Image (cartoon, rainbow, N blue to C red; front, side, top):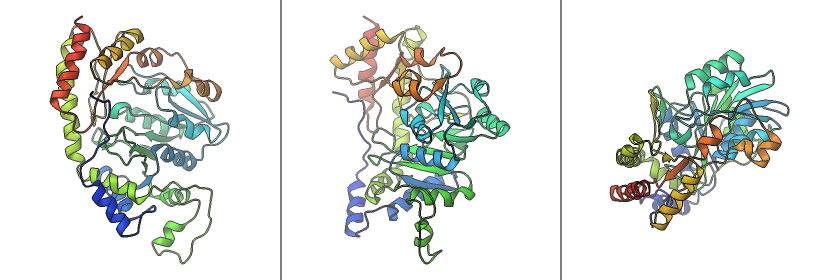
Length: 376
């Protein structure tokens, strides 16, 4: 059986976790948390990175930091994970969903402006499959209407738009280190903070509303409760697991890219014949091979292909149910404009296995089965 995902593992993870235990430093903001933060800051150029317990929590922190409140509206795609919306719904805001581009599955930047009202406070683009949204246009609109931008870059570490790291355009960017991501700590994430003036507020929220971070740095002689907050710090053991992969980030990315390219080359003839659709990476975007997907004719064909692959020992999956069609989406949000592509394209998309140490032979085997399905 070729499983859909195998969590990344380099071999150093247990050594680093053991070091945490032996040094009796396993809580949050330990040495490995700091190493991970520094690595991400150096790699992306963001002013500050704060490792979190999940990308969900990073997005919740961003919602708190933007000051979004009850009655406000936040523009985002419907084709995204629930956490993108949940973070703002918890603040009492209304997610306003707009349609996606069928080529990248990202929010259609040309539909955002029409959805802006006097209650709009933020735009939340989600970079699907590690391929950037059109951030130039989005940042232009944010500046024109004085809106905050929170990037859901859960799938976007190591990806860039016109040479700049995803997660560093908006005031805040959010990474995921879930076990299905390119680099993992089991459950975990990171908040990227673009502007230095927002760092202290973020540290306070992350440390349960206290200024304990300043105390640990020796900037104050005692710490106290300053503002609202929660505990968003991951264990240093989780950070140690992640750091073993960040050390080999280039190698892991190169291996994933080789698989992605091999899939594309193998399946290109099917795309040329009009049997399937393949991913699109626009000019100026460098992606991270987070996933490889194909598009079938419709949901019925996709279901048949999933069953066909399963019978042959290949585990494939589809992705999001559009949020505006879900019970909570209907309750808390609204769709602006016409749903031309969100539902239709979501029902066509099928993800093939993609993970570190997926072999060329496995990619060829999976590709052969896909070809076999369409050659019946």
